[in-house]
Structure formats: structure tokens, C-alpha cells
Image (cartoon, rainbow, N blue to C red):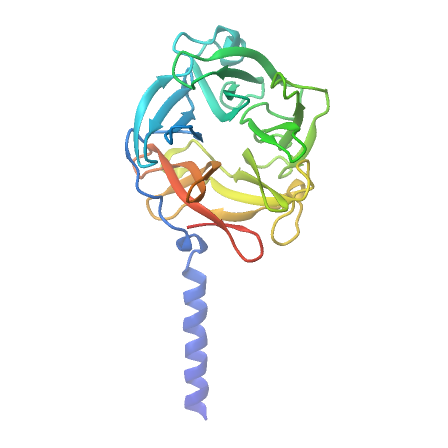
Length: 319
């Protein structure tokens, strides 16, 4: 009896240690295979009518990359090779522009992008359009929304979503009071009214990079928690909530509102993959594809691509 009891205690102790030391993130898949020019930060992707892919990402004049097969990528110049003087007020005259959102609608490509400086909420989101998406073909359509140091939000990290009624919405935000949403005029792509909605927040904590997609009965709001932009020390991770309404309320798997710090984790760093985040979901022929950046051990920011699927309860997971 004593020996059996000791054996049982030993087994329980071993199991407890095993559970305690096994990181949850170890279950996440590694990024899929990509080759070529894969140095990116804050990627956003579209699939063109010829079957090729176009990625826009943070860089001087908004950097562009293309691929014919979603595996091999090459540099394709910048959206604005001649600069963006209209954004200089927000960038302190830097040519570096951030976190674009790339989409295709009404026969043209739309590019929402951020102008700011690190750590400041004196920021702006602008819109440009192009018939092809190629370098140098983009036309400035103007300021969409800005934030000042007196505001409790930060106008960066834009993401366009069109709801089931054909209404256009732009979500955006980084730190401060969290993720916001404004209505857009579909005919211009610019802001349609003065209302600013709150759709996610962590009471001043690190949350940014919204991306909203509709699948089935739900709108899914993907965000990035924690710290970006610190190389291999980055702690970025991808979280998600869902709602039956594009404007929310969004809740996580446990029913916690994203406006109250909720969020269900679907991807985090592990091994030599550090700080995956700033995600963008693209519907493709083989299902939903998650584009994101992550940091290598040497601090380089690289393109990550994985497939995304919904489980039996309708919650996304990466594979």
C-alpha cells in the first residue's frame, strides 16, 4: 500500500513538473517556407487577378514586394519613390512610413498607411490609390484621420473592412486607450463622420495592429499584444476576438470583452521565432492565410506565412 502510494505521488509530481515547464507556444507551427527578399515589417497582402501576390510593408515610401507563388518574394520598389511631403509634419521629414493596409476594390488598389514618429501619438493615416499597385503609380487621396498629443488614441496601424451591408470601416490604433474605429465614405475612401468608436483596449497596455475579417456569422478582430520592434527581445503575439457586428462588442473565447483586455492567443514566439505579429489575413485558394512579421535570433524582421483555420467552435488557429 505504501509503495503504491509513493509511486502515485511520484507520477503526479512528474506530471506536474512536465505541465509547468511545457510552454503553450510550443504547440504553434513554425512559419511556412518563404525565400528571396523576405525582410519585412508590418506586412499587408493582396492577391492580384493574375494570381500573383503584392505585399506592402513599413519602409521608405512604403516598401513593396511581389511573388508569383506565395513562396519566392522579390523587392518591387516603393509605393512613393518620390517621397510624401504631405506626411512630413508627422514624420519629422523622414521618408519612413509605417504599417500599410493594402486592399483591392472598385477596380483599384487602396493603400492606407501611417505617418508618425516612434513613441508619439502625433500621427496620421493617409490614403492612396493605384490602378495597378506598382511602384510609382500611387496617387495621394488625402488625410483620413489624425491624432494629436492631447488625444487618448494613436492614429497608426490602419485596417479597412467592408461589412455585409457594403459600409466601409477603418480600425486603427496603438497603445494609449487602444483600438478605435471610424466610418468611411465608400465613394472616396475618406472619413464620413466625426464618431470614434472603441473596439479593444488593455487599459493603456500594449495593443495595436488591428485586422478585421468576416467569416461565417462573425467578424474576427485580430490584434497584436505586447512589445514590437525590439529585435529578438520582442514579445509581440497575435490575439483574436469576435463579434456578430463589425463595430463590436468583440469578445474572446472565454467571453471577456476585448475592450476589457480580453483576447485569445493564436500565435506567439517560440524557439528562434521571436515576437510574431502585425498580422494580416488573406483569403486564398487553399484557405485563409496569415501574413505577419517575426524576428530572427539576429534581430532581423522577416516575413511569416501560415494557414489559418476555424475550429469546431468557430475560433481561429494557425497551422
